[in-house]
Image (cartoon, rainbow, N blue to C red; front, side, top):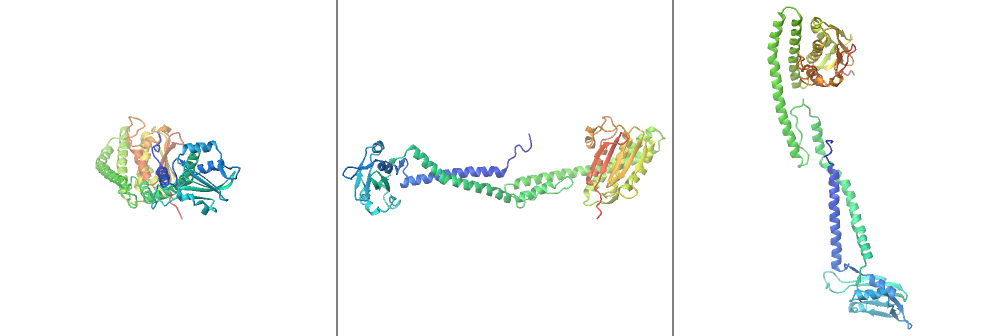
Length: 458
């Protein structure tokens, strides 16, 4: 499972949840509006103000004397049976009229004054008049009896099909456009608002990305970040403080241990020099030299880590020449030839000469200790800024070339080494901004390559 499987996009989640909330609020608003219209008499739930007009329109005719009359259509019979309080008033332009039911006095004589009106709704003020007063619908339509004016109350039963149509129109006309508008605004505005709100958090995240093991005392800024995120940033800062304290204790312990080891190592070297020449003396001198190098490397790392700008121009050719001169007697005594291949011109980098010399010394000592006690150990300096140490030993399996740089790792379980040398080499090179790689040597052994940043000449 990916480490991002449980993560989610706050912008997307917030946008969708806001859209659902807006949809619910909009539907509730439509329901409130429809309810208010029904209560005001503008819309009568379950009733259709136009159905009476439609039924009367299709049933209207004239008798032999030219008077208005109603044909007994099935729709008219159904309307009369469904609405016992049915009433309507029909007038033509010639003064003929037809009425059915109890026509309210307010509407009985109003039609003549509205002959030029094609349709209207006749009602009352909602809060100032008696809500029990009937409202009416006026509409002029064409019938078999000619063009007539029909006035009726809104007393028809709403058919199922028309109810669906009216509900759909209400949703499509009010809710859907509003929902689309608010949804579009939500998906556009929400990312912009979040981006603006979390702009300070992006700065804090960039600060966190720049923190590494060599940058102690760094803390994340809590300026211009949302208050809801401040506890998280504060907790991270507290964790960084605890890590700094633990790292400082560890550094002090390593430095103290390295200083304490220097004196007994020097005494050991003095006593070993007094021994009679032989293979045992050679091996003991190799081990003591390696132990001294490890102690010095620990001190180098502590010193470099405490300095903000400890580096200067360093000539890798001079470093290689010095290491070759110092270790040539040790290599020859162990049965090797030590060869140096370096250009006549300087190969420069920026760094600490003592630390880089210690790293190169460790690689050569590593070749002396773990080699077959024969063949050539080669030191090669090449541009733009690299040093190689190659031997003619058994080599290092490809699947273990990364592991050998881990502390206390040894290829052979019974190896006399402490398993710290190559780790120290990598730490020194990393402090210089370079890297160490391992490959097959030209003579069949192992080739360690230190690559460092070259000096850029303008």
